[in-house]
Length: 339
Image (cartoon, rainbow, N blue to C red):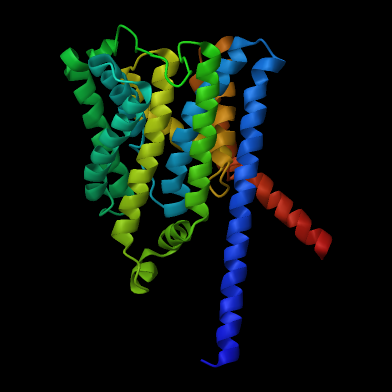
């Protein structure tokens, strides 16, 4: 390589690093603005329903976005991702009920539990391909759900964790106060989305895209496909667990439905609604699904039929999620204007 070529390569690398750093600063700025807007809502409205809606969006949004790290970025369609949502809720609730530690310690302990469980399950599942991966994750979720139902002395069985979850104040934060819980949930949502965004935009994130597009070629160029899949499987599980902890705080308990297969189905549905090719697609899908559920169940008991029609509209009509459709429409319009 000549000296000129070396200088050109170094210059290109520096530009790339500068662009990545600029993107990171932009993401942090957007996250701060989003948190400021969300934190300002209680000053703009006295609606408890709206604040509750945002807390639920925080829980399910983290869960759905973490699922998209597997589905959209890695090509791993998990039918059992909801087990980690339930594990977060039950793990946090049990740690608080049995030990009485502070909330931050309980959060860390729950994440460590999730880390161990996800590593063991992921080590088995990520070796499998396509439909086998999907159904083995579902099998593990059914196993965890069955354990929750049968271990009545620990989990409360089909009644769930009863007696409430202690919420001792820490660092001036009292989560028994609804406003504090709201701000805390918004902070976890924004931090979680920011971290997942950095993962998606990092070199590791682009490695995942390469594995999604052609795992054999990625392996051929020296990428440890198994390790990369296991790493993202565990990371996605941790973020889903945080969503479960927010839900446990919100309802002051944990219930078997949090670990049932329908939770994973809702995660897939959310990603179908919002789209898997744009980072914020799952958050848009979360908002849409919760609005649909709240609206439809208010007017009819046949909400399953309505949701089925919505699925058909997106699957057959748009053939993509809402954000995917909007992004593609914008890109085509921009190309027409330039042409």
